[in-house]
Every structure is written in structure tokens, then in C-alpha cells.
Length: 424
Image 1 (tube, one colour):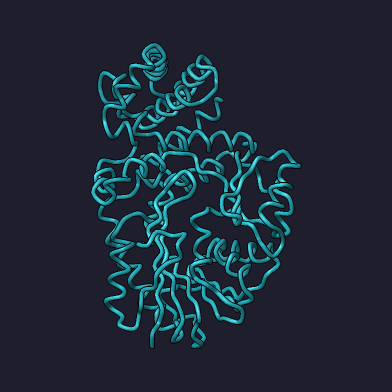
Image 2 (cartoon, rainbow, N blue to C red; image 1 turned 45 degrees about the vertical axis):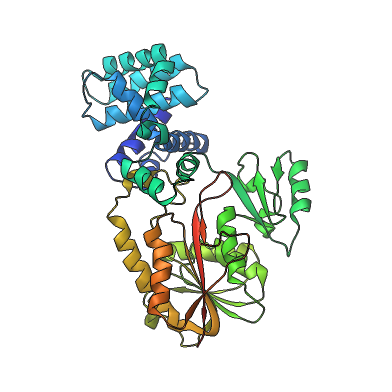
């Protein structure tokens, strides 16, 4: 537990200083390569949990401090320890004792006494502190005030559920490769290994508890892939057919490319501007026993990679704020700023405009984001249609809301989809 608190507090402090969570985690892994997989798992679990519940924990900590604490590492340690005391099954006395030991390593002279006093006061007043923290929206929903306000305005009936879903641990969902098996048959295989699972649609499987992919029967033979239910809709909406030329324009890590290849015998080109991430696409394609043309390139600059032959289908899963996948990346809540969305919208418009000439007449382009903000979604789709007279926005299948906005729920992340046909 000592290593968990030490490194989790360092990771949380890094995020609060503006570092993204992946970078903060990788920095710790580099600094201490001796960490065992189970230790890394515990560190990651506590770091993610603390950031998911940060508003609540900060509201509790504020009540326990007589004055603001301006030492980032010490504050992060207290946040991590309070998270553990509130949400973990570890013995409270062990959490406090280990936190005191970590505080002694920070070099702050008063750290040991402060941490000991704050945490023991928390244990004495735990229920009252929790209730008081819940009196504020920041404490209740653990999102920045501007984000809460935006959700309330945009989704007046669903905003609370959206925010609460963002704070949950995401389920592990599998996409079933119907060329290899069925959901019922695969659930039976899982049951043989005592892995509880269910399917609500016959196409995807949700595990009761996450497991390593090495425990999934025939995973490396391509029978299933790990993919959020909301992300699985993309390939189905794109409506691919045998013989078509298809482009996945922002392909990494390759989940949607793999799904497209499972659904039809197509000629798929997958591009991404990150060589390391493009290798992950290749790994996914290989695992499925499929083939695709992979190219390193920027979707907004097709003149640097396009061969001049138009595509029947294009998936434009564009870079975005990722505000629909917050439960998987809780640092996003604390790193995004209201002014970020205009920049994302400009980038998305540039990419869509660059890709549209690559669509063959009668072909389709699917615009996709993992955002819940209108500037990147409904507004971006409407603006694109207004700029291109030959872009007809098509109705979506009935498993997707008519406006294309899939909101975060316990079952899936948040996504937006808009499908366009080229009329001439």
C-alpha cells in the first residue's frame, strides 16, 4: 500500500498540474521499472478513482483544513488517502499509517502531523463530512462548474445522469466476431472459465467483472475484441458491403477498422498520423486474421497519401475533446477548458472538408466523435452540410438516437454520429 499511495499521489499531483493521466502513469512506470503488475494495477486503480471522485474528495478535504494547502504533493497524498478511506476495502488504520510514512518522505516538516491529524479527523466525522460535501454541485457531481452548467443547459432532463455516469467505473464490453462464433456460444465458453457475462443485443457481451484478455477464450484467434458498445455502432452505421473501397481516416487503435473487416469483404485503407499507434492497428488486424492497407498520414492532408481513387465509404472518427469517454479518462474533466472546443471544431471542419472530395458519388461518410458538446457534434454536422450542397444527411438506424447523440450511460460511453451521402 505504501507504493500505491506514494505513486498514486504523484500521478494525481501531475494531473492537477496539467499533465495528462497517460503521461503521468508512464512517468511513474519509467521511474520505477521494478513495480510488479499487481502494484501497477493498484496504483492505476487508486489514481483513476481519485480523479473520478475529485470534486467530492476536495470538498471533504476543504472542510478538514483550517487554511488552503499550497503543497501539491501533500495535497494529492491527502486526496488519495481520503479516496481510499471512503471507497476502498483496505483497513483504515493501515491507510493512515502508510500515508503518514509517505508524508515523511515528502520533506515537508509538518507533513507527518498534518496528514495524521486530517485523516483521523476524517474517520471521526466521515458521515457528516460526506453529507456536507454533497450539498454542493461540485462535491455531488465531481465536475468543474462550467461543465455542469453546460450539461444542464444542453441536456436539461439528462444532465445529472450524464455526470454521474462519467464517474462510474466503465464495464468491459466485448464485440463478437460473428464470422467465428455467436454471443450465446461465447457466453457459454466464458461460463466454463467462471467468467460471468451477458448480452442484451446478441452482438456484444458485457462482462460482470473485467478480466485480462489472456483469460478470454480464443481472444488471440480473433473471436472477440474489447470495444465499448457505443463504439461498436460506428461500423454498423457505415453500412459496408462486399467489394467496396473503405477508408478509416483516423484509425488507431484499430477497433473500428477491425469491425469493418468483420462485417464485409472490403478493401480497407487505414491511416493515422502516429506511427506507434498505427502499429496497434496492424496488431488488431493481424489478430483478426484480416488484411488492410495501412498508411502513415494526416487525414486533413490527403494530397500527401491519397492515390486518387475515391472511396465508397469513409469513417471520419475525428480528434475531439473526448468528453464522452470521461469515465475511461477521468483526467479529461480537469484538463479541458471551455475555450478548447472552438479549436477542436476548426480541426474537425478542416478534416471533413479535406476528406469529402475522396468520397465517390453515391458513397457515404460517417462523422464520429466521442464528445457530448454540441460545438463538435450537432453544430459541426450542420455546418458541414451547409458548406457542401452535395452532402445529404441520412437518417440513422433505430439503435441510435435520431439526432446522433449517444449520451454516456452505465452501458456505454458517449458518442456522436452523423451519416452523409454524396449526391453528386
